[in-house]
Amino acid sequence: MITLSLFAATSKQAEEVRQLAEQGDLQAQVKLARMYETGQGVPKDFSEALKWYKEAADHGNALAQGTLGWFYQYGQGVETNFQTAISWYRKAAEQGQAMSQLNLAVMYDDGIGVPTNKEEAVKWYRLAADQGEPRAQLDLAVMYWRGEGVPQDYKQAWNLLNHLRVTSPDKAAQWKARAALDKMLEELGVDQRRLGRMNYPDWEVVQKYIPKK
Image (cartoon, rainbow, N blue to C red):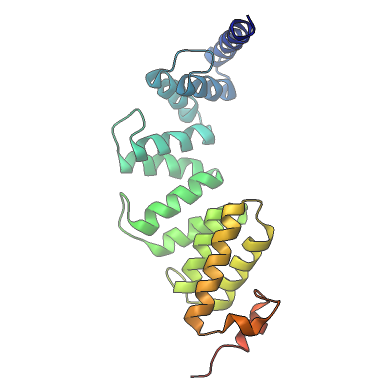
């Protein structure tokens, strides 16, 4: 009885969302698309999900645009098309959607559907990183570390990684930042044991332990 009651309530909610969506409510269109994508309150139906995401995306909803980009990049319910994915990501990214900015950066960084362009990748990584997107912060730090798309800058790389290590609510991102910091120390020839309790001090302290060439 409880299961049936919950299902009926969810179905009723879906119908209410549909009515709003049909009236042009963009948030309702995205919500209805998500319901069809996941089968919440309605039968799972990717064609219906795509229909409503497209409707919202065509009217400027950044979340729908970014979702369509992901669908086309990974062939989720549609044939994989990197150019279409990039087009939707760009629309959302230009509206400031951090995840689309990150996804667009990765495509330029790795040359997925476009010629590799490290400078363009840095541009979008930075915009997403400024919004606190941990993967973008990590990748931007690596770009400074490697000197890809920007002049090589160990200080900037170290500070970005150290900030991510301390402030990110994402535990996986914290771990990856620590691993990257350890790798930087190894490449710079710093004996991490000499840093004592301050394993990840400010860059000014780290510099003192870099062996002279």
